[in-house]
Length: 70
Image (cartoon, rainbow, N blue to C red):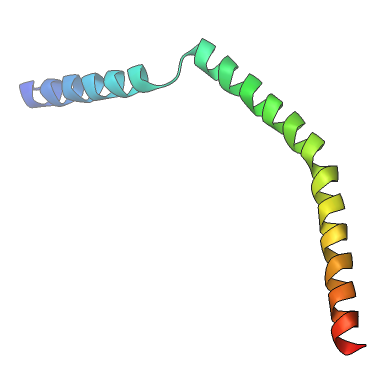
């Protein structure tokens, strides 16, 4: 292996090592997983309320249109 190949390999290794060091560690990944699960639960909890608001909004719109046309 020539000097240039060795230098390129060493440079690639350093770049790869720096990239890997920036990746989240096990604890950060676990924290992210917990946060995602909590958000899923929050969304499940909010969904029925949003559906109820959508129904009310549609009824109000229907009533307003009936009053204008009636």
